[in-house]
Image 1 (cartoon, rainbow, N blue to C red):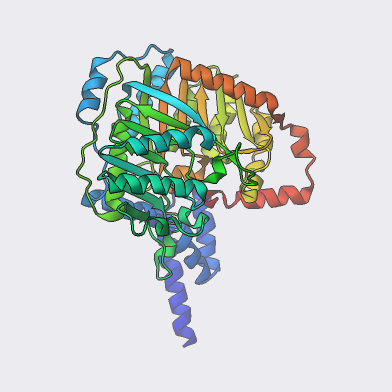
Image 2 (image 1 turned 135 degrees about the vertical axis):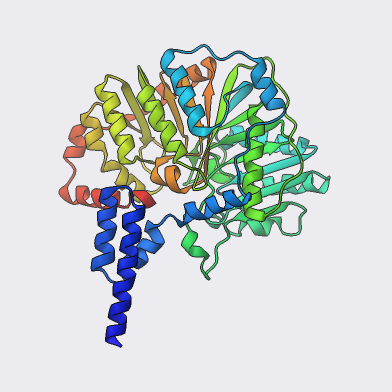
Length: 474
């Protein structure tokens, strides 16, 4: 019996090691997993099976190959409208960046859009609810978190009322994000005509191994004419003025009209098809916004994509910067490639400012993030801590010309594991607005200095660096 278990353990270790050698491209990661598989029998291979393999990516790509998840080219009104309008006048490096993102994403840059920033739940939720109440044909809503508190129930009532009057209402909520609030959002929609689906429902009988298979996108499309996206979930946490809230999270959402809305609608129908097997038949009708000046391109990333799309776009933007890089993000645990790119950009003389929350709502992310501060500060990257309330805002501004907003954080989870949606925007007025907003936030922030990081106790540095080892899963 002992010989049997020995041979079984050896066989599992050898098979896992071969898989590591064939699949892992990063030599450091490969060596680590090899050591675990060979020197920790059973347990090393088990951990590799759970956390080291790319089953999520392979499963999603099989769905793509079967036609249950696909990237469709822009069609109809959006394409015609794009061809009618001139390209934006930009500096050479930004024009080159847009060409790169076209190749990375396979999506066209769409002209004739209008973009309205909406601050916090007080600014976003009334506009979204108003659009829901005015809907005539269809409402598509996808979000990571849908809380069952006052805000969630207000959305539920509006969505259910729309469904009752004959509007097709489809709500897609991540099955892990749904657990952030009780009762569960799914229970709110029971007994209504709303079509509700969790994204990758969890189960104690095998599905929990796909716990990382998360849809982090926040998209709402109404009648194919107006779309909302950004980083804001549905819940009281984004109401920072009207209710005492220890979890208050400041954020900026965006309202879009124009051809970009069709990209959002098509993305939702793809995700809905994957989650439910149902092909939505209503074709969104896009209204051209002839007087608007925003050029927009949707950027999707996730395990179903051929490459790490969001990471490629962010790296391209950093390499193309000539004057400044402004980053505002709640979760900043960049991969080594991104750290390297930021350091080189700072050495080239690019002014790089990164705004982070003074106190993160995820303490372990804050620990891992801080472990990278010293080497970034040494190269000239400037880091700032913004005082409460905790901000959940995410945007990326290059040379005050190129704006990138959406659901993606700057971490491995957003770049490799989650399904994210960002929009790159070329709009002089909007870029100026966010440049001023960034400056205002920076004035209120406290700079992080090299001396502060160097003077941290040794135990703190060890703990921070230990959490950095888990960067791919934070």
